[in-house]
Image 1 (tube, each protein chain N blue to C red):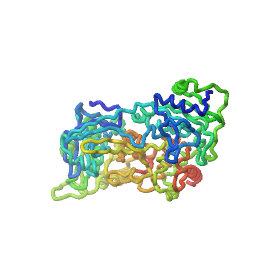
Image 2: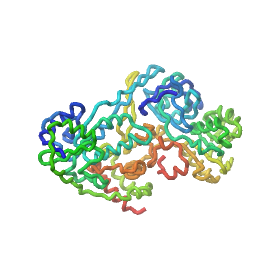
Image 3: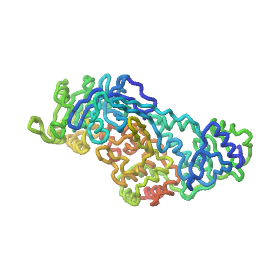
Image 4: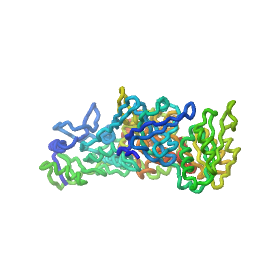
Length: 275
Length: 332
């Protein structure tokens, strides 16, 4: 593992060793350093990634290998535009890991329902892959995922090839609107969840996606009988320092970069609704 | 108790200035601010507190963090040598001394140490000056601060008719006074009584009250006249929010951090356009809740020291003491 600089605000230099085109506006970047993996994050933790001459932003780490981290990044602004123009071999700045990550210990022995929408599958994927790597520690895995169109589905290889082959793991995919090639389910994620009726007994639901999707997924889960402490989500917030100093990612007295990004719905209901 | 004659004070500062940069409140462009002592022989520390707090000596308004170079696909980061100078701050009031302890909580605790801040803070000695006069906007005693004796400082000073009384508080403070040689004399003179602020607000229970007030219409009312200028946050000795930006020239550049303000609309706006605090109501509410509820919940103390700068300089007279009083009175 690379040695982290003493100063937590100064990034290590890393290199993009592989770029995977997920959708027209999402790419996954594999990043490593000359000394190996920049750091070993827990599932759900975050990294500050920079193109040094453009800018720096916080991204969830969607997965990791023994020698690299994977960050799935949607094109939404100046930095992400520039990242999408970058080529393999490009050097970047990276610092982290930040945040609390998913409660992998508390989830042991439980069935887990993953609900993702669009690029919101990125942080959830880190936990899915972790559970697959530690398969014996976790119960049934059920992944429900949706995107706007077939072209917008992220991590297609995982969705259609890798995860369905995992023992005791189910994958259901929907798109808001299909096309001529699409044979699968059509419709929004919350309605799809209600159709599939995943039983709350013994389950924890982990959800992430666009705010509007999360809002309605929470309502669907409530209808199905899920309690607030059975629902986990991960938040996006504008973060600059990542270490609880710069002040901007606070939700009440909590900082998303330190105390989050992962919260149970029960915890979120204790915090001001400012996300 | 030790004493120094008023006309000898510059000699003491001169002794300290051999090994450190000495900062004292001085006039600059018509206002009093802490700035490097220029060696002037007729120094006076009278005149109340400075317009700007001395927080920028530990947390500069802009600070370069590292340099970088990008050549095609190659890139490199160079750390900036950390601050290794020494500073002595002379004439710090009790309110500002408390603010240093609040900033220490932010920058030195909760899992990460901010190296830029730590180096400056650890290399600085603080010589406090008791208040024998105050402004109508001072309300430090409302937060349990003693204007006659500061917390967490190295030396406490009191102004007397013909000089200053000095008492070392820490070992580092004793070392400072040891450098004074024959400038100091022992005295039985008692410190003068502190000037107790006339402005008082009872903060008991305000945190608990605010915990139930997030959605209260009071915030709409109080934010109506706010201009969102951010003066309150820039003049506040405990406001510590910052932005990180870069300056790029050709193939190289540097990253710096600079003061930022939760009063600004861009502050929480995300790359996709979503802004969790879209109007002045949410922003002003965040400022008061941060000082009076969130900070006490997170660090066990208020993030206000009653220095009065924000209410003195707010162009539309938003007054935190009035907010505290009104918050305690509104019905839930």
